[in-house]
Length: 103
Image (tube, helix red, strand yellow):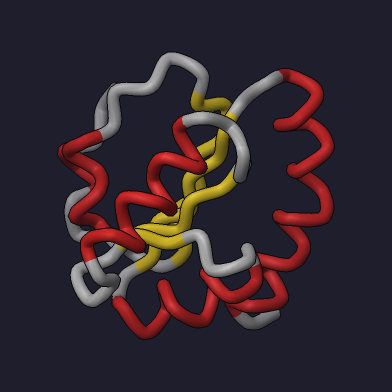
């Protein structure tokens, strides 16, 4: 199964659960290229260094407010997570900061 197929499966299976519980999901990926490909599965809701600031802010705000249950992001977003209602975090690929993510 490739990453886009995995993302589609996650979207199909997890979206109803997240919406029912009022939770959000984050999908961390290893590169901007992967973020763009997988972000496309989730309607372009992504955060990485090549996304223009206004678009990144809009994507993150839509996610924080629950208008989009998923945000696809590179590891740069890890340090900024302080959301009480995150019910799903998925790492696709090996994230180099994974040892420091101990919440």
